[in-house]
Image 1 (spheres, rainbow, N blue to C red):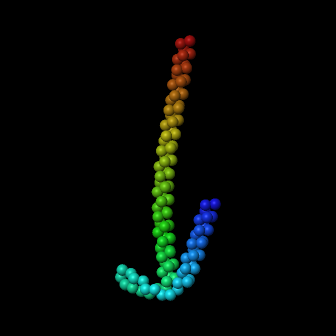
Image 2 (image 1 turned 180 degrees about the vertical axis):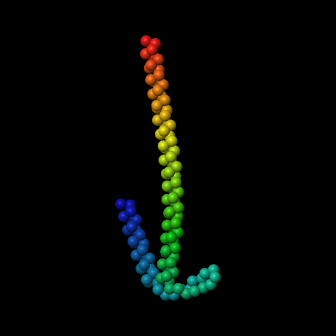
Length: 107
């Protein structure tokens, strides 16, 4: 259900940007570090939206990679802890069996 809401919000946002861009079709002057040029406002708006989306996507990918690395580390730690627990449990069982055997020998 969460993905559906994300898609709905993305479509609404896209529709709003498209309407806003179509309404603003006049040319505007864009200043760069190395010069100036005139571009239709619709291209400036769409270019800005695309650059913003690219930045958000890049940050999202970085976060996903970081979380996957953390999950991998935690799973490894979990496996190690489980093995230690199993070894301790087996050692306790062996000690209990040895103690039982010693008690039986005394009797």
